[in-house]
Length: 202
Image 1 (cartoon, helix red, strand yellow):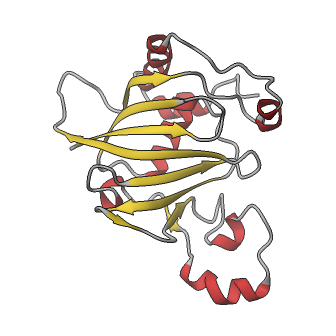
Image 2 (cartoon, one colour):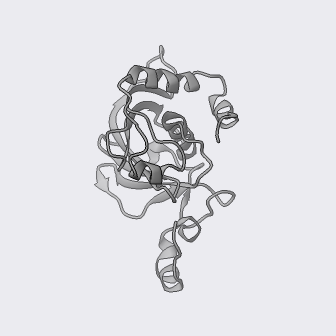
Image 3 (cartoon, helix red, strand yellow):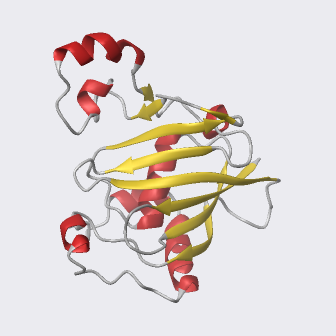
């Protein structure tokens, strides 16, 4: 099955979003890379998924992220602030990060309006609302993932301060150009490897 998801970047002063079609069995690790390409993030900051609504039910404290080699295996390593010892002993046993390589979208979002919060870069704190809009049959004329609509440009890496000072113009009325640029990445053979090996990340 194919999931139509709308991914909206929060708190940037104007609507910035992408509507994407992805396989329902996409891992959260692959979804991370899809979002990197869709919002033109470089991918060198920490990230985490927080399932907010699953199978029509509200969730609490279900976090999914990279394994020990990147973010660390638990919340103590991935929180953007210090966690004191009392908090750790009381809560961390219940707040282990699930490994994003092993978790699939279909494990967690199953009904329309199910929702995930994706955070990229715990310093700038770019939060993205991911909402399951529709569950579709695969179209043999399409390749997946694919972007079908978009709104405005995403801010560049490490630019939260500049954005707050109104130093960045994100307005882009040409949504078709945004979509074409994103899909040009997705249509490349071995697109993930090609995207990660770009020489224009910095």
